[in-house]
Amino acid sequence: DKIKNFIQEIRTDIHPNHNRMVWSPQNRIAFTAFEGYSDGLYLFDMNDNYVERLTDANDLSSLSFSPDGRKILFGKEAENYTMAVYDIETRKQIVFPGDRANHLYDACWTSDGNIVGFLPAYETDEKELSIFQPPLFHFAVLFDSEFNQQKILCRVPEVEDIANNTKEDLIAIVGRNEEVVYGDDTVYLLNVQAAELEVLFGGTREFNYRFPSWSSEGQKIAYVAASYKDSKDAEITVPANLEVFDIKNKIRRRVVNSDINYGGILKPLWQPKQ
Image (cartoon, rainbow, N blue to C red):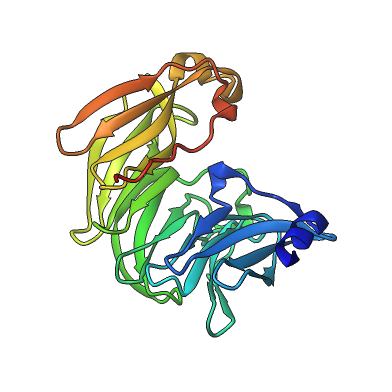
């Protein structure tokens, strides 16, 4: 009854493309919701049917649990597009100490509970920087769970989207070519342990890619592809297709031809193997 009443009283603000609802190994659900006049980060514990509001914030996105389920990593888009970590046990929130010129565009967990974040590099200083100005490229940086920098892994073209395979410490990255403002996407594979970046496919000015998603066994990546020729002038009005890339065999296959507009496609989800 408590959960039923809670759901009736608030308006949830869940967006599949930005991972605003995630499960933990301890049978908990973290999600963002709008209650009253403010957004918030909530935790629903299915073991005792208890819901609590963890923190107030606006425009939260990219929620993910640490491998041990004790911490939540999330984006704070309204605050310099940076990232934060909430410790469920200590009730402590740590925000990456950045500004407009030095913020984490995106981040994800590693298998040992560290964080890989992507720091932008600009050609202008902070005073001249526009919030709409894209970076020249990103640095993939390894942090501990409190955002203390461990080491720089490698340089990465401007990051558009990521998906991490925590078991293998592999990150699929959709990157934008540095020489064009829009289009010419390339999909990369970052090996965190080896600090190596590998080009998987793209860079031919044929397709734009979004919403990468790892299969449960970590051997394939599903993603959404839209024709660069059709989408360079109006990204959200062109048809998009669902494709799968086999990491081991380097085979790319289209599995669904879609008439759904690019902007209406949701992040693909894999069914775990039985």
